[in-house]
Length: 195
Image (cartoon, rainbow, N blue to C red; front, side, top):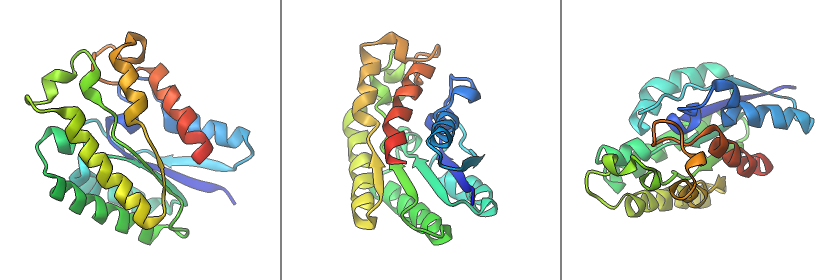
């Protein structure tokens, strides 16, 4: 039976700044098939700028209609940029995880990804509103890790590897903010063995 995969998230999942054919969900699906896992990426409703609220209001309908067997979730950076509190982020994250797990036949077939540190990129500082983005994102990531532990879900850390964007310009897209195709490919190598 073919596994139906849905990738939920924001710019980091739609892979802003990279061609869709080179996005990590597409590459992940290709590599899983090479490894003789019969899987199809049936939907990637992720949109640049999306928050946890957008996942709930705009991505749920796509996910619900997909009958997905497997999901990846990377969300929260835009919640932080727009000033969501830790408590608000946690409330929405719990709602998303509850909803996704309720729909999945096997509740464990959900991989959580930590939020990358955009503040190390050349234009990242323009989106911090003068706050310490690394600290704020780390706090959100602690919430993600806590939920992964509670639910016994697999988690892939993108925060630490993303810091290399601060010293290697080839890992940053032309907009000076998003990861490059090369950086997305690095993420995929971290996600693949877990998937």
